[in-house]
Length: 230
Image 1 (tube, rainbow, N blue to C red):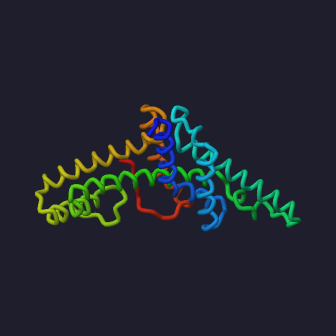
Image 2: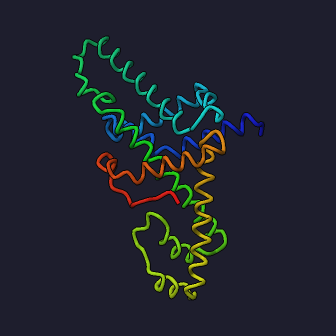
Image 3: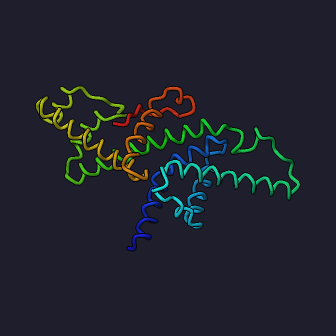
């Protein structure tokens, strides 16, 4: 596989892994669920078919910002097409409040996109560490230890976890320390794949942490477990 082909594949994988923030952003712009799913699919196909991903040179900045900017332009073009079709068919023009994509402010939708992006990063890291445990035949150990990671809805006490794993408290805490360090490493790797330079990793992690912890964003985001960048 050539370097160009491998780079394109990596960008395609990134797009698919971050489907959820794209769809949630479109929903926040006033589109229905089914239409948002179709538009998300159309947007990704548009990126691939028109070689738009070639412009996502990682030396130019954060992939998160590139993808959101491309999506906003795509939705604008979609609105223009809809508007032109309505004029051509003689249909009555809708007001801005009735027109999908314009009736909802882009600012809260953008915050929603960033928050969902941060959540997906954590979910991807969690999935990766789970796969590592499963590959080692330690699924049960992970099911217990993971309840001490950010976002767990079923927390355990140290005593309960130690008893379930037949470990002493010092041994359990040592296991948890290793798990948290590995989880943090995987989060950093996930973030690193979406930024252009090593010095941007901490900046991006700090920003996403701020987005997750900002309670003022909760009104525009469906309820999810509390998450935190480690």
